[in-house]
Length: 235
Image (cartoon, rainbow, N blue to C red):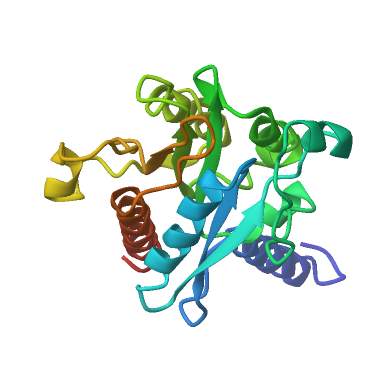
């Protein structure tokens, strides 16, 4: 090379490029708590009851924190009053920006069914993540689902199944619970929601509340996801 230290300049350029590549890889620190975002939409409180028990299950695992977030409401206050939707607990914040999702090490998304698919409020949240999809900011992150439906044939499985497309386009890893809950998955003594796809609750006409069996499955799902996230991050 000629004068001006061309070789030195080339080495510096290589070093910067190498550092830049390393910094672009989103690797969680082994010294901080891992975070699983529990992002849900709940109109009458059924999904929220599962979300709270999922958080409890997550936090039985040392070094993992469950963080509750609501999907933003898309209905007007007038409509919510007419359908007698209860006021939401302000202590659980809404996801303010789609970019907030990047901070999670894993996800559990919860929503009621609407004709066998996720509720529009949750779909609107996924629809707002175009920039994250473009840059594949959520790729490789594990995620699962929990749901509510009005009846036994109302979509406990199809609601989760049809939601998998959202994860696929983001390059996320779907984590079902399968039959790892053991004998509880075969309990026929009581009507219960939930499936191999994830925890679930039957809402009925809205007056039915989640049973302890349904809540126990939700708590287990939280613990199970925490175990998976720890394995993926720490090996």
